[in-house]
Length: 225
Ligand SMILES: O=C(O)COP(=O)(O)O
Ligand SMILES: [Mg+2]
Figure 1 (cartoon, rainbow, N blue to C red):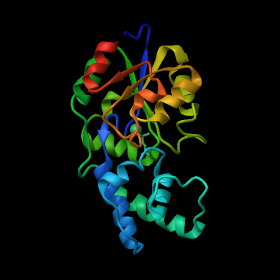
Figure 2: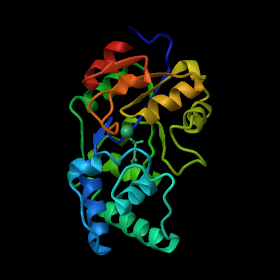
Figure 3: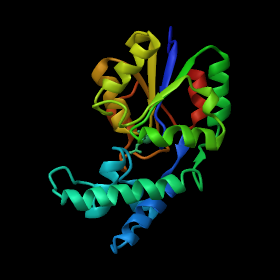
């Protein structure tokens, strides 16, 4: 298939452009150690990434992914969250790297005239330092973090807001992501989407959420435009 008449491509960050779990896991375990709690393997923590920093901290404190109806003492949670943000801020690009073919594919799409932006659930404060640290911040026109707006993916709010920022219709944009949160957000506002299979989707196949296309390697995205 080919996407036609598209003007902009919105990219998810963690699990799509960059493999950030090693550094997220380092920060989670630093937080747990400071709090005197047991730490977890990178493989376990990978299943907890996707809903932003607050949910990641909550999952780590409770030691499981399903935490929606769980209550944690607010003061304790705030302390843990602050420790996590400080720890992660120190390790943003220690082991975090772009996935294979990401940089050259983004460069090719940009040189063909596509407007490129990032919509991540990661806290906004970390986005620019990571992009700068990895040397590809100049490829993107703008970005939104998980705390930039009142709602984050899977809510369509950030996708619709990005369309407004760029002055584009939903139909002229495509969302690319590794997680159901990306595809559900796109589906909720009628935007077309591409799922990547190599990221973090809580151990589930991304195809279950019915993106318009699925790619196993980032370089395959350029063939879709
Ligand atoms: O950090 C997260 O929880 C998810 O970030 P993402 O939206 O870029 O995948
Ligand atoms: Mg992601």
